[in-house]
Length: 221
Ligand code: HEM
Ligand code: HEM
Image 1 (cartoon, rainbow, N blue to C red):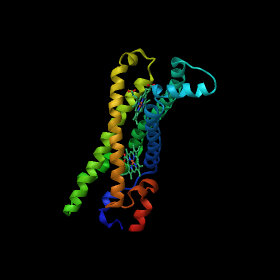
Image 2: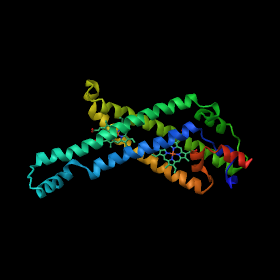
Image 3: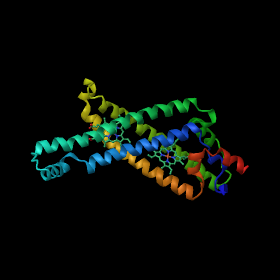
Image 4: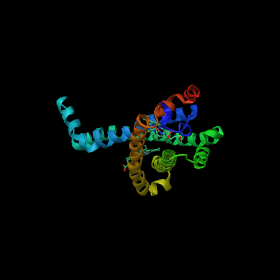
């Protein structure tokens, strides 16, 4: 079944990385959901007429300022959730750094890079696999950098009481806002990549991110 790819590219994943990965998936998905809801469904200006209409049906007339305050409260709540989830993302970045440091040597990204860089392909197909593997690992490194930018700028926005952060809020917000598109780009590329890979030359790729892959390896040998 796994004969499509060289065993070197059928990597097992430590329990720490797997747990970390799925937690990151949940927190980032929730964070993006808050952005989507706050930007589209719960936009302050778009819900003012709705608040006025609902109150009107209860016999209360609310002027625009009062309706705006109610509508804004829901939008604000979503940004508060976004900020808390953001603290979670920042904590997970820290955990990822600690994991890299605490993992067994063969699980470290650096070792994986070195091992594959030193691999001499015996065929054109293996050469392609090597190139693909290194490309994928590079996208992870770039993604970690982008996530770090999101966390640093996000923390800068969250700490608005600090005068320094308040004074550069505009530029911080712009960087945070632009970098979001790179994050969406990575998520899309990653999801497409793992689905195509699992259906093609790397069957069991997603399962290995769930079960670790060590037992599969034993079965195969
Ligand atoms: C998946 C990663 C993230 C995405 C896609 C994202 C996206 C966004 C977007 C689109 C905004 C609105 C910016 C604007 O109004 O121009 C925003 C605001 C904000 N983000 Fe993030 N963000 C992410 C991660 C984080 C992290 C890690 C933190 C850290 C705490 C954070 C904290 C904040 C804060 C405090 C605001 C301002 C909220 C407000 O206006 O009250 N974000 N984010
Ligand atoms: C918000 C969504 C997601 C993000 C941000 C994300 C992020 C990442 C990162 C950073 C890695 C590399 C971990 C490392 O070795 O350092 C990774 C690996 C992986 N992810 Fe995701 N992931 C997401 C969703 C998913 C989903 C939904 C699946 C399954 C359908 C998945 C399957 C995998 C697999 C199989 C690997 C290992 C691939 C390999 O060995 O190159 N990911 N992911």
